[in-house]
Figure (cartoon, rainbow, N blue to C red):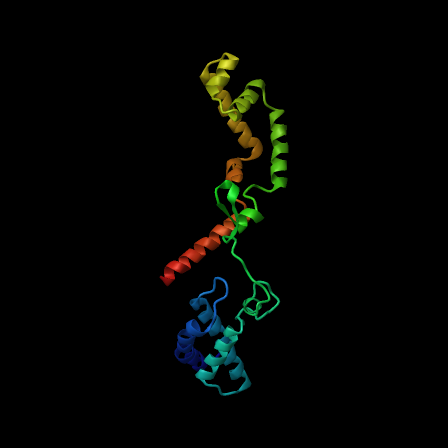
Length: 225
């Protein structure tokens, strides 16, 4: 693109787009006016470049008009597919419909009218069953390497008891049993990995993506208001 075409785009086309796009183009999904203006600008720049290469003379008004029509029809600078489920054109023409995972799915009258969202009925917050099974196999292998005191500490803690209870059962001092517990912690970290607690508490990937989408939409809402 020549400097003259760039000047026309910046000084004459973009102001028209900023004025018309928010009022005349329907948003799809989480799109906003700023994103649509950027898409229309990229489309207009491509039109100017093609016209310049072809040796045609065009006006800023014509470029802005056709760029807006492209965006209104669902075309974007990244593509104009009408078979892509996520495509703007596909949704504008009613071929697909996107639903938020935060939409209410069902109301359970048996639990006092508790509302379940779509993500509650489609997915679980737990880890993948294969991951849990693999960890259980590792845990069984680890238990086979523990002595009686270490196994007792594990059992007592799982039952909600304390190290003092384990020390009383083995008739040893609490400090002795605490040292055994500290050694057990080091053994578990060495065998299972130092980040085992982080892995257990980590949210599923789909949950992280959902939270990121919520934060992005919240930021856009704050900018608009």
